[in-house]
Image (cartoon, rainbow, N blue to C red; front, side, top):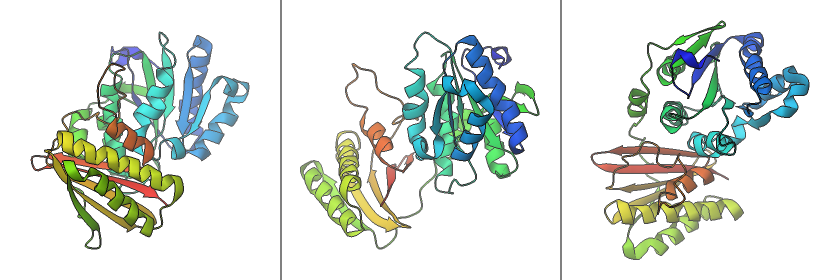
Length: 310
């Protein structure tokens, strides 16, 4: 992988492939180069591709960290801190290589905007670092919108073995484009208005209604913790009050917190805070706990909606 294409230490190419042969032709040499150079290398791709790549690597597979992206990256907002940074940060002073495939044909329409923003935000999250993150895209199975976005979120593209700078690269545009208003909450949603004096009551309200929706055990505890973080954040940073909504949707409990604040850092919740930083961990924790987190921020305020499976 030629870092000279962009002249930057961080390299973020999109690999467009058609079929297993092209997939392996684009990924196996990438791993072999890392192993030969003594560079730490991780592979985080969907399960079927994971097994194909593991098999093709033979004995070199023992030198690779393998992760099933459908599990560790189910929530796109978790991938930068929990997968990419988690691996890169354990190897300070070394160039690191990662294959990350966060978008596959099974991604839902609700998940995709968070996926596209994730790919765009990788560029800011790793700017100036000695890291290469190769992102495969199934050019046969993914739709044209996804492939077009990949050209905009990756400074470098690879197709049929050829590599060149993407003329469509514009990561900031993609981040803004998918800062979309969320669909309205259903009329059946339970609603609770909260302020400084009603934070504990808001948590109780949320857990009670989530329990009625079928959430139990550790997942109910996850919801209580996520609600506590978001409602507290609304009080501290969102104008002192907010509105909590909760409902059941397709086997998931959906929780939404709306307030008058503004999220100015697109990497909020996706970048681990510095050790000496006060605060900044609330949305990061919500991303860790939830199956999906969607955010819309604008002049009227911010809406954060998270999903938890039963």
